[in-house]
Length: 63
Image (cartoon, rainbow, N blue to C red; front, side):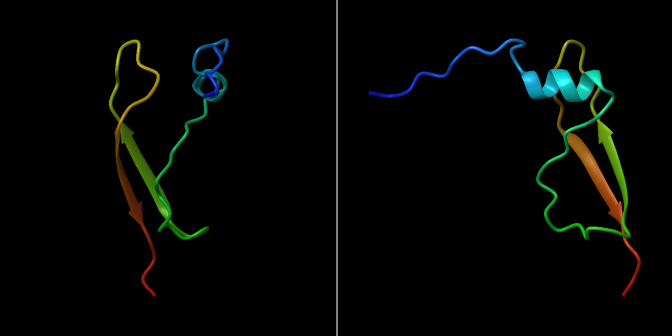
């Protein structure tokens, strides 16, 4: 028997709570150093969307 996903309220709770608090969820950036990089994110502005692909750019000091 497979477990059935349960409905959550709101439908995307992480998006709801992060975006409602003015925060962003940025993932898939494992190669950035923990400190010292200037990180720039340019998301698409999607009407009614709960997420967006982004153009991510990191400026890091030489060394």
